[in-house]
Image 1 (cartoon, one colour):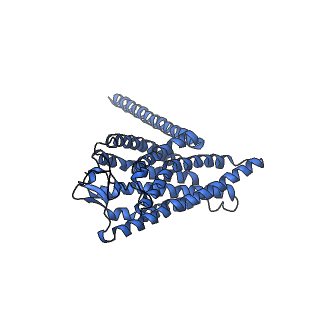
Image 2 (image 1 turned 120 degrees about the horizontal axis):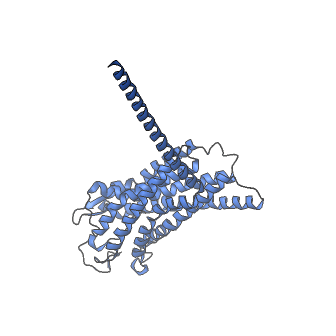
Image 3 (image 1 turned 90 degrees about the vertical axis):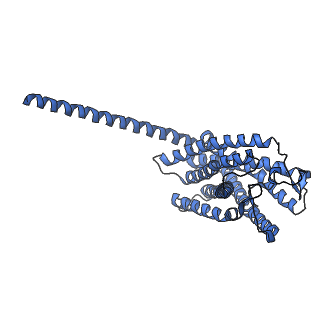
Length: 355
């Protein structure tokens, strides 16, 4: 299932503006969404860029190397930054009532950024869940596996796999000549079969499989934490803090993205006449949950600051590093200035002596 609204706004067609055309619900051209959604996306984009750049700067500028958990969180921030950097183009598209003014390259790249964010985020959280599972359930036997180098390699693999999973977006996303709409142009002769195959494959790969893995690991993590508390065993401080932050980030992702995935599954069922979309208002709810999911890219860095004690400590240390660096630079400049003045004075004294 492509992670993209499958509904066709009224502006994308010159057909009769009825409630449904070819079984697809349509929008009124004067719908409030064309004014509210662009403003919402603009705010999300601005906040997301500022906050995620801040998170990446903290992780990159800190003098200590990132832990395994921090590598995964920085990878999550990078995926969020990629998304919010592309969202202003989509905001303009909505404001123009789904008329695409940016050319075919961006018509492919902007949807690609959204699908990449969804895939990379959920599979990064799969890595995070597995890491926490190994750290708390099998802490002794898997210590050699949980290394920063392996975490970086795992992130590279995730990005590579996500690019492959999103190749259909780059292939089929095109601009329609009749109304300059950016849409999925599947081959006419096999349109239904191609769309169905892509939808079913992506439902399994982008939602069902990762959610099952995350659910399994989370249950084991919670069970391990309960056992440690019951047995009066103290979990190592850093591991416990990292686990708390990651579980909250995981919960935030599920709250933001699961409703959209569920609606997309219902939408897929409706396309095979199992459900009637307009009767169940699937079209409207799909749009609402789609745009609500963007909020996750802003929520993550806020959670790092509010919940992550280690992250707040890193922030203070980074600012302290920068302050010390400025002081040392200022001191060096002052020393050089004083030295230059001293040399100048000595040269003047020697000149006067010769005279």
